[in-house]
Length: 239
Ligand code: BTN
Image (cartoon, rainbow, N blue to C red; front, top):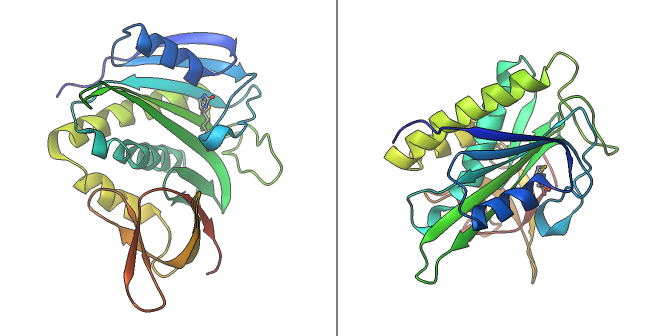
């Protein structure tokens, strides 16, 4: 597969880059379309949570049309996290950690989030995937949030991110998830870290073991068994 041919549409302000890219996806926009805004008035994340979006940070959404079965789409969240961690480190920023499935932490404070949404055809084929990325580069809009700091230039960060994303996406399309998994594990929770996972119907607790070959979280439980978690909100509850 070739590198992604990014076509970036820039806006001073939008309600949400994610809403805009989804409209464009439905209207047939090509893979590689990117919507970037300097600020958002209705930025949102998973479960409809507000994503505060003042000027000074990165807000963009990318449109992809991957050639893959629908059950692997979630791997793109992990892939995006790995790319963000790589780019943050490339600016000399220390203390980056990935929290399953899609948070990027800096010294345990969330500094970036990503939102993956997709559309399937009636036959179940993947039509498009929209990945929205918010990175606190110049400021932390909410108390307790992390940000990268004044030494990181926003335009340079965006350029490095899109180049690195294209490289890793190409490898993922050609070779599968193994390389992403390996790099994700190097940036993630320490093995044995106590986690709890909130799901709509229950709370699961255990100790971080790894992610499996498709990207699911695996927790070691008190009885020694492994529990596979396919979705949920993770909270770090101990060392
Ligand atoms: C999360 O942590 O729940 C995900 C946050 C994703 C925020 C980004 S900012 C750019 C894009 N536009 C949105 O409205 N959301 C995503």
